[in-house]
Image (tube, rainbow, N blue to C red; front, top):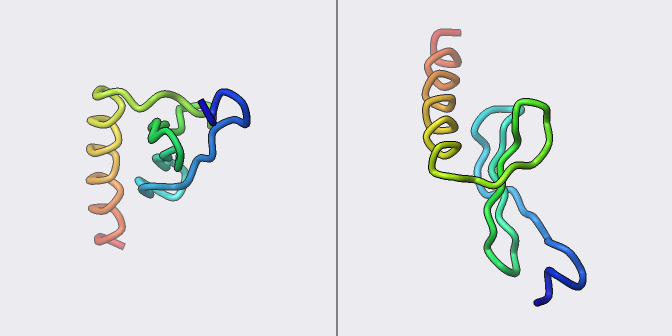
Length: 65
């Protein structure tokens, strides 16, 4: 109810890369992530899997450098 009136209060819950992050609303616990255009998208199981793979690739590249 709070989010319907005042809007969501998203906090970063996970940094996938420097550009991709996952957010959680501190009131209703709705999860969002950044999409390819930089906007917010609902964090579905498909996007969770994409973010996990993206994080693994990002971490491997950081270790090589």
